[in-house]
Image (cartoon, rainbow, N blue to C red; front, top):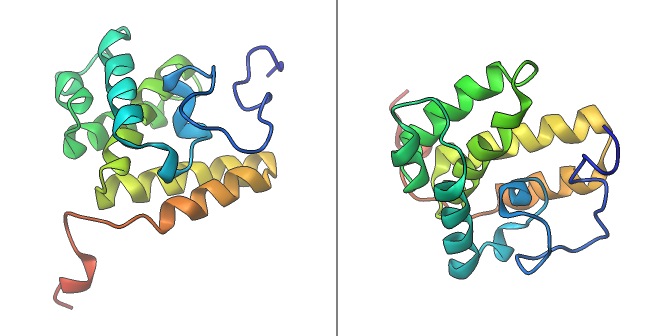
Length: 147
């Protein structure tokens, strides 16, 4: 990907929500701390403004429903090679839910960032994935599952 088309190419260390980078690229570069309530509102507004993804779950995902966001993201990630333009909206919905502490969305975001880091040999993205690992979680608690 050329630098003009790659939102990760212009990174210069710390980026926050005041960056000129479009909100739908934030999942690739923002730390959890940068996604404060104002940034979450901006991300939610960007999701509302984007061309809806072809899914009956899209409006729920934009409102922060983690189940809907996961369902969409998993389907979109499976077809990312053929339809790469859908990845940023889908992962932005995941990022919004992760910023709100949803365990399953944090796990998926960490997984996708980790794969990007390994594929690109990118230490910054790996550090970003690690930062998301330390986010306080709400929702299902894996520790309480009977074995």
